[in-house]
Amino acid sequence: MTEIHAFSDDRYLFTGDTFLLAADLVAVPSVSFNEARITDLIEESLFDNGGHLDVFRIGDNLVARTDLGRQWRLILAGHTDTVPPSSNAQARIEGDVLWGVGSADMKGGLAVMLELALNSRLPIVDVTYVFYAREEVDSVHSGLREVAEARPDLLAGDVALLLEPTGGIVEAGCQGTMRVEVTLAGERAHTARGWMGLNAIHRLGPVLAAVEGYEPRRPVISGCEFREGLQCVRAAGGVAGNVVPDEAVLTINHRFAPDRTPEQAEAHVRSVIEPVMDSGDRLEVVDAAPPADPGLDHPLLKAVVRNSGSPPRAKLGWTDAAFFAQRGVPASNFGPGDPLLAHTSHEQVHRDSLHKAYRVLEDLLIDGTLPQGSRGCPEWDGDIPERLPDP
Image (cartoon, rainbow, N blue to C red; front, side):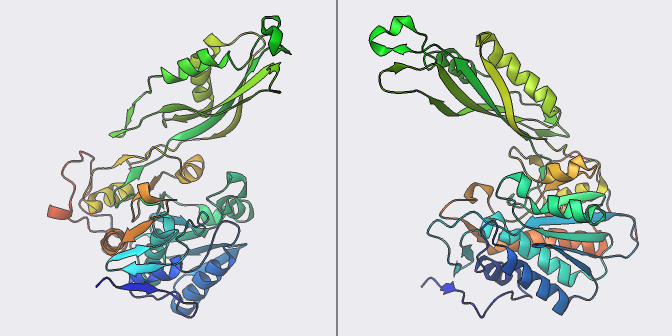
């Protein structure tokens, strides 16, 4: 018989088993802008069981860090918020699978972070644990930005890992994202005399064809193949049922690899779209977020790749790895859970995925040893040291 366990209000933040800790975190509702309670519980856990960490609270964000004078500082970061539930608000366990909103994205990663923070008292590198709010909404609300404005020194480090769901594989850097609006002009007329006007909606055809025929670049950076994209995501236009529309607006999303700046990405989009535009039309960038270079040259990231047992791959989506990369900190993504299940009604994380992510990072923090054999990564040709320098 399948065991199903639902968690109640009086059973939160069980430490000592990463799987049960993840379940307790999933049981705490924390849809974006409602992260105060989960932040309180994480803070209490750090104070009750820590003592080896300096803990700072800034709004609904927590930063806990060691101060051991090590050669390098590793930042482990994860967001505490989730998207709204979709018939999966209740945390439950079925065998070795944890179900519930946020289980993959990314309370499994938070559980790994918190367990490491409590157990790794003398890590070989200094560690900064960042639990931040409001990642699942517009970046202007990001808790990382709130911390950066109040205490930028707390986000300094040599390498950053976002514990986003990656299935236990290092997903290097991230692609940038850009949203543009293409406004096509027309001329109004009565539909009974349509030849007197110019239908702006009809003029969308050549733009749609240009986007549909787009051949995405697939650059290889640090051994990881990125794949750019150009997709129409919204079309709007029309005045009334008997009026030839004089304006149509097409929204296009562009995903671009880390070897391009946002300015270069914009120029690339213009080179695709502007040939089918007229002088009265407009193309405007309405939102953009920069990419993050893989940064896999750093020994700490090489060590995580080695410990993971799998070659790294490109992060095709956007994550806050870009936030750290913009500040000169090489950043990638590594965490438990299947990213394809994020934000779905059947979101889940497996016990083995959580334990593997914990073990990979614990091996790094405890003694810097880079395992060989079945847990090594012979397919990756990166220059990986056998052991990190002694502290």
